[in-house]
Image 1 (cartoon, chains in turn blue, brown):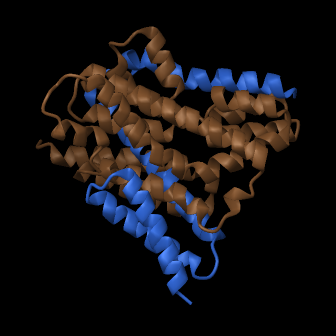
Image 2: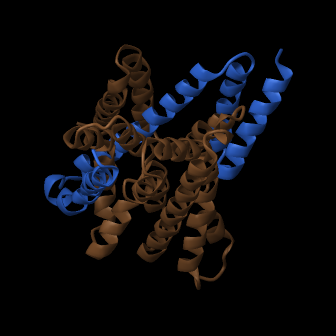
Length: 105
Length: 244
């Protein structure tokens, strides 16, 4: 298929998926419980993407990088729980990874 | 995680300039996310350019705007797939965007049609996570709108820059040791503050378990399984919390 036609079709589909709920959700999902379920679905979606990203990274890592990656993720989670800003959480995770990876044999 | 805006609100003694401050806070909160997305953005840009027309790929970065969808499109163009198959792939890959948009719909109900379409067009995973946290916190409608606009436009501009750099440089930078870890770290930092009560913990635990278990058997079904499991766990926990 022509790249421009494929791009146009993909753009239309994506915009429809993003924009349509803005105009039908009030009618289709009128109750607070249903709206709460949508939020839970969004949260579950993000959690799943995060777990998949970590798993894929771990699968591609070798040697000391693999445990160091686990340490980095744990550090990031602990710091995020302590309400540190996102940039500090990410930076601390990267530093923890580099430090652990360098120390481990 | 306390957002930059919450910190600014706490330190501010006067209400004047709250909306511009909210926009700046949105930009400040999104910048680390853009940095975390750097390896992915470079890879997506390189893959899209390899598949066919770089100009079409750059347009897709704006209009399709999402790593997995852009990669699926690049794959379809690269192997000359049928148009119907391309559309089908987009529907599957982007189905989660319906959930994100639907969960923001009640918050944007009072906005103009133009704003709602524009805001929805910029909805993608990190933008939704920051928006949801901000709309659930205290603040005026104008502050929330400015915050989301600042954050979402920062992500769009950053993503386009990363894609363009990936097209120019290839994926050499993305193969740097440990660079790929920035994305999961950033996602963890975004997610943890959203898991603040018993129901959210149940949703997250069910999503993690579903992703890991179903992912072993059928990786393509891990995401839908996590959504179903998360919603069911959230419902069960909420039901238990309400006395009969």
